[in-house]
Amino acid sequence: MQKELKYNDAQRREYLQMIDRIGANWIGVFQGNKEFYSSAYWDLLTQLWRQPGPVRKTEALGYMQAIKSAHTAGKYVQGALDHGLIVEKDNPEDARSKLVALDDDMRDRLDGFFDAAVGEMRGAVRQIDIKGPSPEEP
Image (cartoon, rainbow, N blue to C red):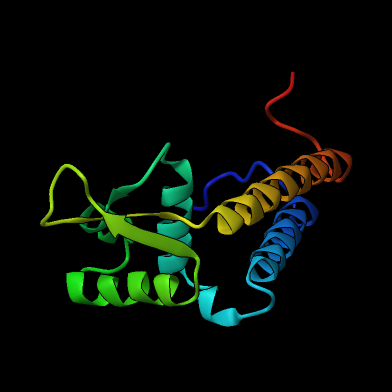
């Protein structure tokens, strides 16, 4: 038995087009370097963006939901460090650990990315409303 669908094909396609535009904007954050078009970097960088300050490196390793191995997660963190996307410093409260945070330039680029993503989302919502009924509204 098929579940009753709320939206038509045109509305679902509008959603996919929005996702495509946001994905292209994500690649633009990295000047076209598709190496960073991965869920691991998405998880790492967006979680670091959410933080008010540096976090322990081991905490950052856990941000990558699809990566089960700490060793593999460490390779992604190292890649972000090598490309200057994040910075690492000593932890003043625990000499055995390091802290990582977004590089200031990367934080600015992500601010711009999220600003554009919200704009894309708002535009898609308007187009979805034009292309069919909105079941959320009476």
